[in-house]
Amino acid sequence: MTRGVTAAEVAPRTYAWEIRAEGLRVRAGGRKMAVNGLDLDLGAGVHGLLGPNGAGKTTLIRALATVLRPAGGTLELLGTPADAQTGRRELRRRIGYLPQEFGYYRRFTIREFVEYMAWLKEVPHEEIPGAVQRAIERVGLADRADDRMKTLSGGMVRRAGIAQAIVNDPQILLLDEPTAGLDPAQRLRFRELLHQLGTDSCVVVSTHLVEDVAAACTDVVLVADGALVFRGTPEQLADAGGTDHPGDSPIERGYAALLMRSEPGRGTW
Image (cartoon, rainbow, N blue to C red; front, side, top):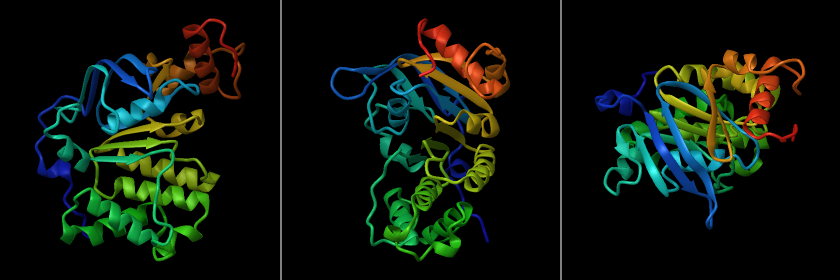
């Protein structure tokens, strides 16, 4: 099947980083500053975003998706200020986003759902059928493409959500808990897909599953209380812990050790 032309191939790259944040501050409802003074530069590759509940991961992902506006600092996406009125529509054409929970018409088939999302992302009309078919095939749902969304298992709905996130061949792909509901075999195939996507795109994966990060990500970003705690490779994360730290694997022990150092008194929860 012939591959469509991506946004990255049409628009020349004139920026050093796909995502660049300096002193970024983002509110998560009310006055709570869920992201507070974050500095971050992310280019092509698969970046694992880790942190405990309430660390600011989802708020950060929503800001990167231009759903939330920064309350302070700067955030640039593909060389464009994320809070700029002009250019936001173009940015959204070049971003793929899978939130933790997403809405859909239950009577839509998988194909209709992904087609609708492609239309919303302003994929050229003549390219939509091919783009939809490729996205559905990549998540392993080609044989269920004409099944209605309401008949799908939770894992299949999640895979359909991943398909809509990649249908526009995004330059930035943001995935919030993408493996929720996937069985072990599906998680393995998803990791392979991440490796493929990270070759040309900046992929940010927010997850609680540390082992997924170890297997699929080129580097790790660890946040706590809205601030950056660690940035490095999975191997460096694993080296941060010792046998006296909680966890079933070196990378889990490294994760626990860094959180304890960032917040003295924090336990394993």
